[in-house]
Length: 227
Ligand SMILES: Nc1ncnc2c1ncn2[C@@H]1O[C@H](COP(=O)(O)OP(=O)(O)OP(=O)(O)O)[C@@H](O)[C@H]1O
Ligand SMILES: [Mg+2]
Figure 1 (cartoon, rainbow, N blue to C red):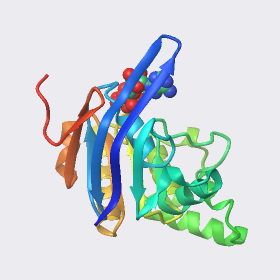
Figure 2 (spheres, rainbow, N blue to C red; figure 1 turned 30 degrees about the vertical axis):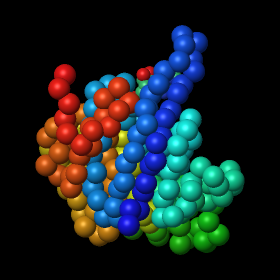
Figure 3 (cartoon, rainbow, N blue to C red; figure 1 turned 180 degrees about the vertical axis):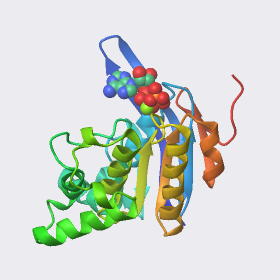
Figure 4 (cartoon, protein in one colour; figure 1 turned 60 degrees about the horizontal axis):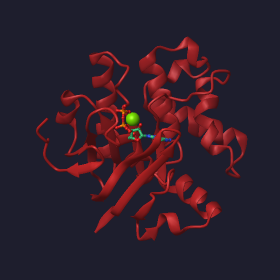
């Protein structure tokens, strides 16, 4: 059975300059344990689809079912709980808080739990160790390289031990060596059981994933389309 199922999802944005159909009748099933790449040109709907899959952005029509839960039918508070329990996000911009240390950034998702502060700190440090930042946990984001900031963002996404990670262009601003480090980290996490869905522009990243879906003008395909 699929962990994630999107049925006939459409997304229409209404802006000052008219209506954009960002997704058109998208159907997609993702099994537990997949490492899926979502690829397509700029403006094709990748970030929109990722945010719908992650419970952040309701589709205009259609459904998202995760682990048998009709996600957007949940009341807002239940939806927030659902996200907290199931998903971690690595955004296109890492969105680290600039005046918090790496450790404090990673502790953020734990703040609403009832765990004592000391335990939160230990959990955050443990994931920073896992992403190779043991000795840099007390630095501010501005004192870290781009690749290191990226790993902090990943640590923050996995600290709650979610079932699914969504990553929007996680290698976009990295040099090729740092990008490979990140993909290796994702591969390790994936082998430990995490389902990963990664948006990417970069064909070189595809050798790391278990499946690729392509999107163009809001329409999905399993094969790259002609340009
Ligand atoms: N909040 C919004 N309001 C209006 N239009 C939007 C909004 N967000 C996205 N769009 C439009 O929807 C379409 C899909 O955007 P989306 O951000 O999903 O593309 P993308 O594939 O992630 O692109 P990129 O590779 O540049 O990040 C684009 O035409 C975009 O301009
Ligand atoms: Mg995008």
